[in-house]
Image (cartoon, rainbow, N blue to C red; front, side):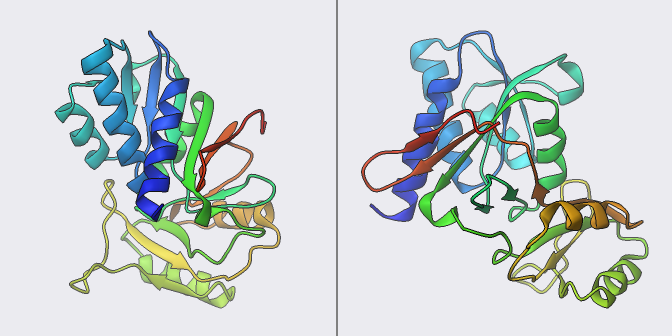
Length: 228
């Protein structure tokens, strides 16, 4: 199976956790794409009755196009379950997210959810976080100064740019600075430090946040429940 098939298998398996009447958070990314497609199929063909909030404009557009009932996150009292991807998951089920520049909204939705599921292919499972660059969302005003702070701390920052060499903008119109760390030995300490920097809106360390992980493997998706 190629990587997309593994992602698709994990995405489809995750929809089994969605039940009638739930309010569901829909994440962002290539694996989530397959999950949303399957959710849309079950809504249309099986009459699955759910309402959803989302973590990015592109997921919103996809879900609406499939006939999934969508609401603004401020319009719901509770989020029963959020299903999202991850860029890395370590041995302690801590994660890095934000490769799609949606980690601010992803974290807001996740922190307001009763349960969180991460869906990934097996390549995203690592012993220690850090090989994937850590996304850090910063406000445009003073962004070079924020960059300088991160650089002085030895965090190897680089502004994220698109294929045209333009600075990437998030859905909230902020910039992304990726930190090329190679290894994050103490993720909680790093998270606390990044939280303390004025100008940093949010970072991509998602710690102590996931309850279930679904991994696309060659044979069948592996489901790891009761992580927390």
